[in-house]
Image (tube, rainbow, N blue to C red; front, side, top):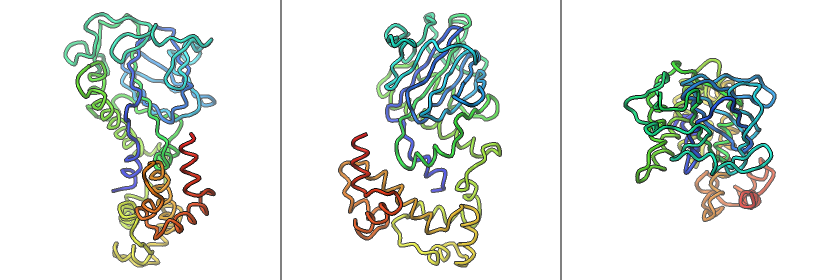
Length: 338
């Protein structure tokens, strides 16, 4: 498995909050939910993402954005529109004064807002596509903005490695990439059928993975060393081996032998491209995996140690405490408390 695939293997929607919003101008949502990552798909009319201290980012119909939390931000019809709705933890919507709006703004199946829709505007994939290729059309309230948002609650160590590689806001403009996923998500979000939540979770996962894969392949992404190194003919195979077989008793010599290069050549090239020696990278990777495995209440420290390449729970505990400053049990207790 390559470096990006391994990092993307962590995020899973599993009941992520997925909503279609229909809002009449002037509209402004202050997002204070603390979510680590949110995907926004602008179906109709323009919007803006206003991060705390960074310049506003425009959203045009068909654009897809990924916003990295947990810092608050605003999504509005214009950068200067004051917040009219606040989205709080648990996806509770209120007025700025704290009055709840969830029931008042409910428009039906996974749809919410202040612009009532006419019968028929439920995501039909036949007639009524907007210019971005999304469902809907004349049936929407005139001038209403339509936006799909998918909010993840990712809290693992592997996911954190991915999130820290992202800017606070990234946008893929309409037409800059080709994928059927946005249209599929827009069509499915307003449907009710057995297993629909699972279908939507998987579509959201695919959307996020497709968007991030496209983003990281672009020069403006300033891809992190682990992403750039995966295409190297020497370091790429080394990274895949470390990710696929973290429990193997690796040495630089063993890794170099599997790839077919000298120990010195691998060590030098790996350090130059990744930013740390192979064994230091392996240690950090093993401990990140261990930190995620320790979230499972039934996983013993001994079992986790075996899965990530430590001969005993004592060896894992020593490495964990040396690198992370706490023992595996302290880490587990902290996760449970949070």
